[in-house]
Length: 119
Image (cartoon, rainbow, N blue to C red; front, side, top):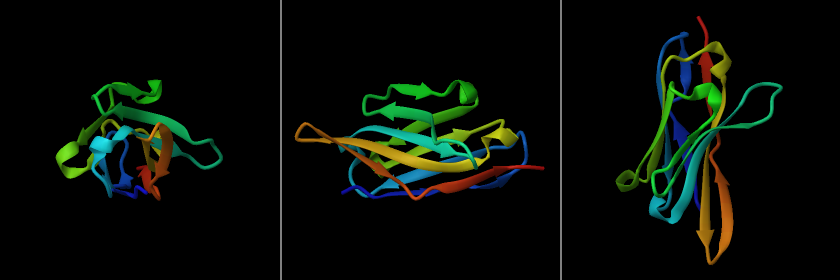
């Protein structure tokens, strides 16, 4: 079992920055892919960014050039640095982890953290 705990959400003005953190209860060396998803009211949950254990990253077109995903293996933590925030970035952000154990994939979610971009 993997527990994921997000932090760093809050209220920020348009153009501002926030950094989200996701702390895992296990060594993230064992987690193949970590990612961030978001869900705005009335919309489906969508992938924001992901990073593999090898460091390969993937971003949604809407956040490319503004958001940066990273992982610190020593701290068992992944981060999402969000710059130039827009009102449309307002959503609950969820940390996600995909782990392979004995050839079976397991998926884990954090509880979510609210990000509100508003003046």
